[in-house]
Length: 487
Image (cartoon, rainbow, N blue to C red; front, side, top):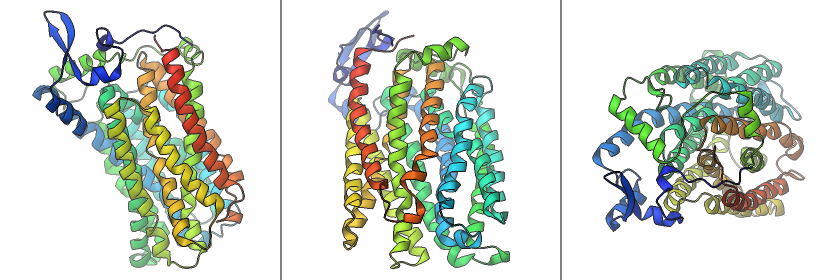
């Protein structure tokens, strides 16, 4: 742990209070920087959208990187998360019967994906320090798309298991790579919104998957001799290919290394200056000593436990479909469509978290609130008022509300490790990897699908994970204040 508290250049002449920074702006008067109070109109504009209070030149620059970076990040992750959700929708739409899945096979589909995802995390992030993100990320997505389409031809569950492993391995580059990319270009007052907008694309994918599977089930089932669930994977893979090709052009790498044709030289200089202003260090050489330094500091440990709790907690709502199917009240189309209400709720809450956390420039209170909402849902499901459909629906829907906190955890890591690009890259990879190490086996114990939908301990464990998230958000805030991280 580092006990040295070193302020970034932006903070050097500013008051200690973050609220003071929000209501004032830095003025350069002949090389002497000082803060002046910002007009109320600028403060209001900054709350609405963080570039509205900027100079026209910087506003145009932010709009340009928003267009290129966010378009690729959101659409690319939309497609990847569409595949993850498609597994659930395919399972309840004929795949279970066609491939004779039984017992815990449903969980094993996720477990094999998790194993590949875990093994790919750290190597992918290390490769990003050697190979340009604009080459590595789209290439992984291109190969991923071909393997997703191959799932449509699977004749048995063993083939699906093998494909899920390699799909997870290729997909491991996406989430940590994109979170690192966003951290390369956006300041703290911008990063929470962008990370959450990116996170919301996964919720949109899950909404779309339900409608897509319902449409394919009614319109494509049996076409060309293929079941609707097989068409789902073909469609997913096909739309992934052009997005990967687009990524070769859209991804700008980092401000100091960008060769992007859509960035002008003066815009690259502005990007570098913006990161310097908030103390966001450019990439350097990744060495064995870098790894030792990362593992000698608190962020990699506390954020890992926090993100493990987040990932294990949100696993609960992936079983919503199973409960709907078990009631025998809903058609196959309705079982696919009803959960989209939860994903819509996810998008709304994620955007609320983003704007609130950027406005107050604090992550921990918003994360604590997000965990509290989902905790209430878990408590309802733990009580299991099975005869009260409205209460059950409310419980399930509330569990969707915490997902947006994941983006805030990653934003917090980017900000805490601003002093070193290498520390950010490694910490994000390790945090993500450890979360999925636990996600590979804990659900097998907590959510034995032979018990579905009334799991013996699953709902209580989910409640515990959300409670841990609340506690850790407070602990990390205290530790961060006590042991500020510096190079």
